[in-house]
Image (tube, rainbow, N blue to C red):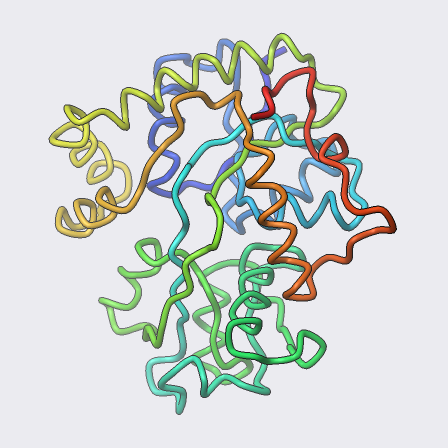
Length: 290
């Protein structure tokens, strides 16, 4: 039975989409999760997918907060994610500082949009317990909420949201880059290790091809234009900021430890007595821990 791979249909997923087009559902099928990492984690928990390609911070915080539904098996993007801070087109908010003591829109509890709101709060010196949230499910619900006034702002990846800002549906008032590499890969512990290794090894070849200078110069731009309709200048700007790993099967323990350190300071996780253990986070039967 083919692996069920949960993903978010964004430009970051381009190497995965190229792999899928060649595989033709022989070894895996794609399961789109438009609400983001919170939805991916939910589907892993409900056994609706075997693997999730998702954001680093919610995956790590989910395990730190007790989830046994998945473990980390690989990495996908090695550079930070630039989170735009977005408000309504006619709202009164003009800077991140203006958002203090307001209600922030998020897609789901435990999502990247929530964990990064805590990181933003940490940077601003806001107590974690003072943050208030409104769940709005997806980017459409988030935009409607900031324009309707039920939330002050929300956070989403910059280039994914830029077409909505260009269309004057919302407004950028700042950005918060992640202090960690942005995408990891998780899988249910019961998923066959050899199947996972084969999938991740082959994915590594597509990632390497996408990340090559030759592909960056031509093929990538045309692929993203055809799949997502982004303007060429936005694609070129994004390409300058993104990097992919040479081996999707390798995970750096420093990434996990550094992410946990920031998330603990932000009030997202609490270290147990004796500290966190890396073995609780990584499926060592699949991934190589660096």
